[in-house]
Image (cartoon, rainbow, N blue to C red; front, side):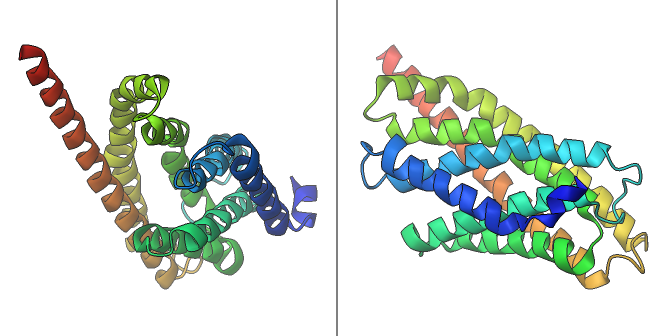
Length: 246
């Protein structure tokens, strides 16, 4: 992976995601309504980022014999971080153009970029831990993007409605497991490691405190989101059962 670091990764990857977005907007989803095209195009670049990022992060972690919360970033770590930084920059641009009032998502993307950029270009350590968090964040992305696209068209497409109804329970269950249990457990281990001084002299206190704060807030929002989805699911299921009885 050393040769890859000689390429200006972020401009290259950003251009790649921009091209994918434009292809999705003007070609793949050209017949979709103007209201739905931006979100669908955002899902397109998320498809290209999410699952590949999971596999790349796994490979980068297992290729590092010195894996630890405070270990020095390897060129492969930097490569994966650059890939994700580029995606979040492109998706942030998408939100600033089409949804400038969506403060929650814009703030989320800015916070994630702060974490990745400081790890990549300021601290130079701790990438392994962030890549584990990246895996936990993106392992559900394929299901979530499929669910989002199906949800946006379920009112005017019987097929989309079937996909949405079929996918919702397993997607919600997976999301709950990852964001509600695995994520908090790993963040707790990070917190215990750093607060006990495990990263002293390598990862500055301001860095790990801000990283954990950002991740904690992101997980909290995710838990709130999935709780609301479960409430909607059971409310809709109850309504359908009542209609059948009638």
